[in-house]
Image 1 (tube, one colour):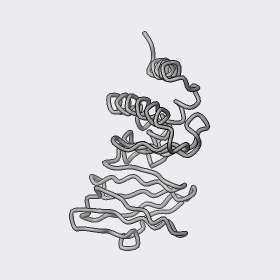
Image 2: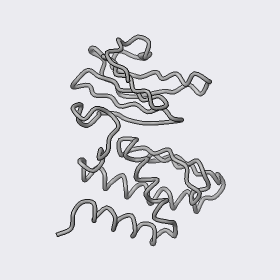
Image 3: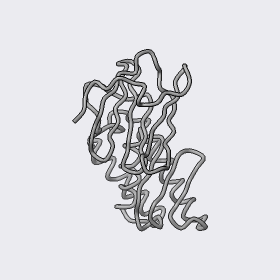
Image 4: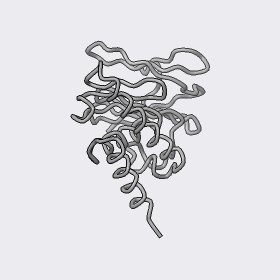
Length: 175
């Protein structure tokens, strides 16, 4: 009987062969999807022309006019996303947030900043360039995020009460 790790290694190798990219390229997509909660990815790999992003319905590659490369990334990411959603334990293997929080309702990353929301525990975890901070979200149920592209990379979130700035939340822990 094959272990999950063996199945995943076979999936990576098959997708690489099928789409004419390296195993490392598929692994870069998989790791980015894990950081993005299985539904979005941002990463850089030479096989995709450098900086690339994917979420269902939106695909961007470093070589922005290369539609065939976009199609490859879309196919690979869609299958890997489906795999992670079908195997939730693997989706968060090696997760960066505290293990006791479990699986987030929303997670994402961009430009060395990542976040994960845990409404059942009223917590929001943000990792900014390796510095992790945990916030109490009170009765906010985080459902979306927006990141400023300015130098301060400010995050704002959307809850049932509207826009929530991180500065509006109480920080409960920092590392």
